[in-house]
Amino acid sequence: MADELECVASVLLAIVIAHLVGAEMIAWAAFSAFVLLKGPVGETLVRAVLRMIGTFLGATLAIWFERMTNLALWQIMLAVALVGGVGLYGMLTAKRAYAFLLFGLTFLMIVLDRMENRHLDIEALALTRVLEVGAGTLACVIVSVVSTLTARRWWPASLTPSTPPVGWHPDAARHAVQAAIALSLLPVIHLYWDIPELAQAGVTIMAVMIVPVAGLGSSGLAPVSRRLRQRAVGCLAGGLLAAAILYVAHGSVPLLVAGTCLGIVLGRHIENGSTRNAYLGLQFTLAVLVVLVPDDYANVAIEPGLERMVSVFIGMAILVPILVAGHLIAPERAAADTSEDTSASE
Image (cartoon, rainbow, N blue to C red; front, side, top):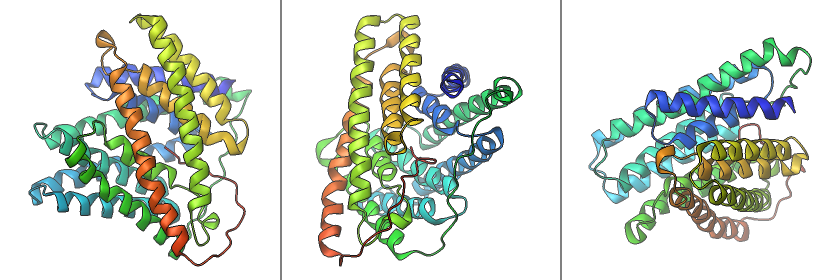
């Protein structure tokens, strides 16, 4: 139970810090605080540094990209595919995998948000992404240090198994290319259907493609399908709980905060249970935070959370046909039976 209470403290502190520093997407700060808190304080600190480095580099590249291009559709398609693909490949194979993941995710979120909101300044978007992640990271580190000096003296945290770097890997490269193709379609979809919060579709595509390289074989369809199912079930369950809490709360901030705490405890408990259901618990918590942590508690509404949830399922719908096509084309080759690694999932 100590881990669940740590997560509650980390998320609540992140929300406070995010409001104090003027961040805009408070739920992303809250989720950063939640997902970072794994293992002993040393492990948390390493992940925190890598998350900040990846975020800063992704934000910097997004600013440079706008300054060097005229944001034509083909340029955005190429950029999100290339950077997202590199970020995913690095996540699967590199030593500093977590930094690669945040590099790709941050660039993707900023560029797609900028495409959706042409009136916004790219530097302001980049700054708020850094502030959000910084708020969540700072909150997580503070809670981890305090917990290590107090509660964790009696209930020590267990180490998260690490995955060694694998260097060049053709299966991982093919897997990253499939993700890149899916990402490249997002700007086109926005152009013709004007779907809001499309950045969440990009995050979904990258997140569900994070599977152990040894389990890829000739096709990543099977392991990714498991993550897709768990993301769908987790998001639906968490979204339903959050919607019910939002309805009961009627705008009451104490009730919203209490409901958020309940969702965090339930989600983390599921995540800490069976290894095969860990990702489901993570997605359950993500849905709760997306719906119950508004950008402004004075204007609580379900619509922003629903828009982000819809975008999550759009990302899944785009990715599945590409994975199926790759599975049908690739020569059959068995993959190793590996346990799913959620240590760096989003």
